[in-house]
Image (tube, rainbow, N blue to C red; front, side, top):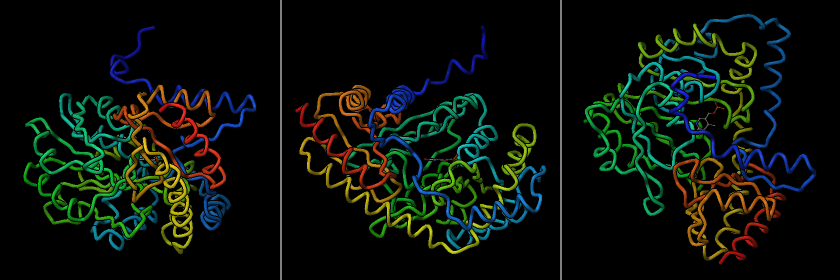
Length: 388
Ligand SMILES: *Cc1c(COP(=O)(O)O)cnc(C)c1O
């Protein structure tokens, strides 16, 4: 069968092979410990579920406005003002089927064939593929463990060409867990303004911070930076709502109007009653977030203790999200081999770093119970010791 040429550009997911194997092993009754999932293990808080149930009972079951329920767009605009010092009207917000869909919409809206998009590596798996699907060209800039996996202003400046349209910034980061400091954000904003490119700030982990780390939205740096910023975020990670599929873009009006047009001909509105859950998430107490972040903080400490007990493994202390990104190069293995062997011999699932553009690392998620961390990390330590 001849499928569309654009599919030829897409890299098949390397993570899928390990993941499929882990699931098959679980089905066979094998005791697999999984550090590979990219979602909170908590239930969605009860008050959020209750709001969606009420919406269902009130008949919020029909088509709604393509760009989102007015109450949710307003709640998002209010949140961006109070939490992030970003002044958007509700017309500047579009509700999307998750943060992934918001980024996909943005690529469709912004990119012409040949437009370049600067993506610091390690990157979230979907960024380069989305850019390619929209006809753009990903320009990957590698960062190292020594720079804390952060792109420097000079690296950004050097990656920019006359064809550069967009820079993708993700802080806190998936997969590394690193968080840019406010000073670093300001320095990157200067380059964005100077070079007159767009920046999309993927802020999906902004509330999951540790050790006093601070999140500054690049759009809040200056009026000039604000004019070049698009915010992409969602409810999945902060409120344990991955399956609800609610995210959003906030941006200058022409971008939101264009994204609404694309959405109007593709997905239409996000599930109506899900949106009522999202309103409750923003407009109710944030204690549930505090509790989940505290649990993540304890698990982070636990996982780090195991990793730091292995001399051959280097792992910077992440101060955001719920991932660790240890360097495994001293084991002499590449990431895919490492993840596969660890799964086969010790029944621990991880994601090979090659999926994120970093073949000497693996990603471990600590969004799982501490009992699993004890059990899985003891096996991880044993595995590494068997190699060196
Ligand atoms: C999880 C995630 C998203 C979006 O997830 P949705 O479930 O689509 O809201 C976006 N960016 C990063 C970096 C993520 O890890």
